[in-house]
Image (cartoon, rainbow, N blue to C red; front, side, top):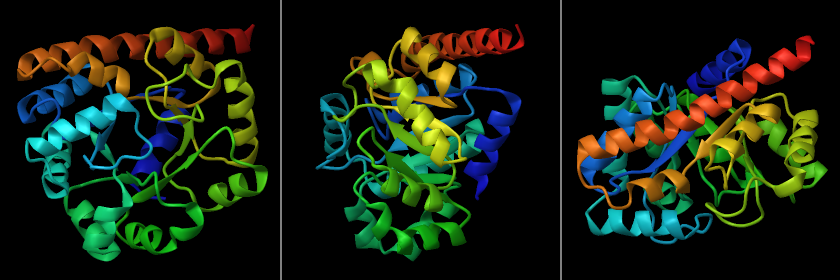
Length: 276
């Protein structure tokens, strides 16, 4: 387990239910993206996910696809995405999880890629289009660099494959809450609690729910059954028309702060219920 796993384990031991904001590197502008990251810090978050823009993001819905395309047109690259991660780590003391697709990793090579991530201070990496049973090479290279390779599971993941994820995952397990792409649905509908319980029975890692979490009510629901919530498309929508760093910082702090408070209140209510 690397630094990411140490943090998520500590947060769970504290009884915290963190919000993990997702930003696309370089979106909506370089300046506004850095402002958004400052807003993440202002909202009290310790962990952030930074997406590396890619031309064919198969797991992402229209909001993140559009954000990636805009960032690419403005010149964002994997190398510059890592520079942004290094800045967030150095200047804001945020623990950074990167999300990127397999093609740029293959072009660079797993070992070189892992070294670049380590130099940037990245704590974890998510590769949505890398199957767990084909990930040994990258997983090993990242592990040597003290970086956790985060696995994604879905409501359709069967028991055998869930056990495979549990055997190899580190940092946290990313629970895709819908069978669609990012920014759709409302958290696995009526089955969220059963879905989380099924995964928890198979895996001891902290469970973070993403894809479709974007309101205080949805975040609170996640807090009552899982260990954290990942929020991407809803935040990017708030940033879409902002180019100024200060405005992006304020918008992010306000929106993410609302979700953080909803998660904390739900967690407190759950704890009080357990004691009654």
